[in-house]
Length: 568
Image (cartoon, helix red, strand yellow):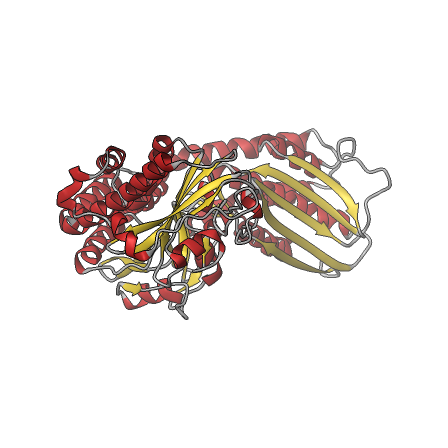
């Protein structure tokens, strides 16, 4: 790959077949005046019609690549545009869309870089990847045999490169070259026309975009839907590469990523930002919109590597607030160096105000709905308590009534801990770490005997679960922790109990481990008389998950795996 997703080239029958278009002849490829559109060749006129179907530049370029491949009859087309530092970035391709915005080529590097610097066409008739200037891109396997690589002229300068590819040997004749020239000219004209129209109609465009986004988020009653619609519609209507929303976690004074339309997992997992930290943290503290010309070189920006990898350049960060109360931040990134003008900033600030009100309204609606639904949840939880008590009645292993009552109390308190966290945390989701820490505190206060020296540690992610799953997980953790205390330290007086929480792909994994007494040889919880472990197994199955308990490296490890539900 020629340092672009699949850009390489090669000699023509052992000799580099290269047709140069000197700079003095390049005037024939210069984009004509918009008023002369009808003087373009028929192929170029067809490309101009694409403008009627798109609303932002990335979509325009993507459709231009598809149409150009169809009209030219080649197997693939790539469009690379010049950036502010004279390098090339892949903006559209018909074969490797995952590289769009990520693939960057320095001037003079690879075939595309040579075409940019030398301002001349390259024709590679066969053995594309063997060309002396071919540069392979990591992760891309070259399958094309031939290519024509054309400079893209706009206003008397090379604004980029268009690569026409063939899976087979290809020596284009003069008629084909003329057609390719016309199509390349059409791409340049269409792009310039789109940019001219966008700039001329910026105010009206942005008012229309603002109205559409505001209308959509106002009509949704659900917080998660509002946030996702906000980032998706803002990116689409304003032509941004990435949009994100971070909401303020008041107790921890952190901005937590809650929505982004970026599909890259590394971006979706970006860590929380403390108030005052980085650009987003400053914007909310100062209650001011902050514009960063280039995040790839901005010293205060967190995540330069990811910005480079994803092709993020200019950024605007707008605080979300209701009166003097901070709510979060809306951040938008462009794929090219971009100057946010006053109209654009004003439109985004208005949108941010509307979004903050919609977010607050959704929270109030959800809390109201939760109050109405709470009696159903309480009823369900009481039924769960009844079921647990009936299970206890069928097990006669308790040595005293006090022991049986303590077991019941622990299970009821485990459910109560979820309700307590629900009243203090965000809407209808509860963090598993918070549950585990509450249960550990309760165990230390009530069930660990004075002569036992047991250290507890809760580690891992604060995975957020809905009410139903959180209640079941609280009972599971309660049983595993209590089992570790009672049976893991029946003879050993000191040791450690670790609770670990992780997400692996789409699963949540919980481990409760202790280094006390080892499991009996041949132990199988399915045949043992441990009520607690049977409860864990039943609850794990109700979550659609699995439960195992084994000795590992001197530790007794109970493991529960289940898929996290995304809704209540």
